[in-house]
Image (cartoon, rainbow, N blue to C red; front, side, top):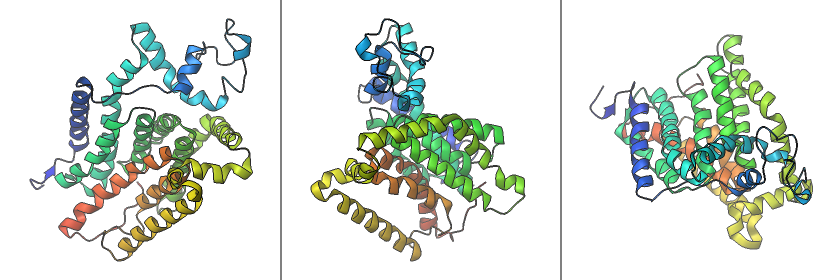
Length: 346
């Protein structure tokens, strides 16, 4: 292995530790923090917990006991995710924001570790150029102060389950559950991650190999749907009602996304942006400038948040994970002149 590569066996761990150290310095310097969001803190302050979720606290004022208003089932997954942090902060005499800020370097390190696992698995080693390609993602996490820190971590873990080193079905299922749970912080990221899982599971069926190998990817999907199908449907119902029904869902969701900055022509502008970006990237791939094989499944994974991102900035941000993976894997090949090849799902 050349001097330009970090040893493959330790690269993801080393990069994760470096990320942890850098984010810890930023936190200690007061330059990076992490706060809970109102959807979960409001419920917690009103008296709900994982123990009494099925009924309202006895001392809660009658006007706050609206089952579908103050305690919508659409918030169940994200509330259950955050409740341990809020409860632990109370026990320790801390603000929830203080505890989350202290833990932010951990989430950042896990995210970078998961991305590095995929890069190492595909390239055999991580060059310093590939490691450098991870810096923008680490920087993005550093400037974020909210739920997307959890979503990025979960999305990176999810992709690493299928594109990193192979693992047993049980491990893949449990890690997929954890990953989807982390992305449940918003309805958009929740659905985006689940659709990504559906995509890679279907891609796995098409791979060569035994029937058992091809169906292996469906077990994590089935596990996730058994646990979170209710939450996914509740989230979709909440969003649909928010935009005034099915008829207003598409236009309302688009106006809620990046297109909101385009004013009254938001929908048209959003479509044009997606078309232009997709056309530009496709042209570069077809011309073999990016040296990314058209059969590369990571491109399909990246397309999910890029397309769904038109409905919300939080979903679009998730694209940073697979896009970083594509850049870290294939740009070094472009520089070295290595011939591109397709990589199957493990």
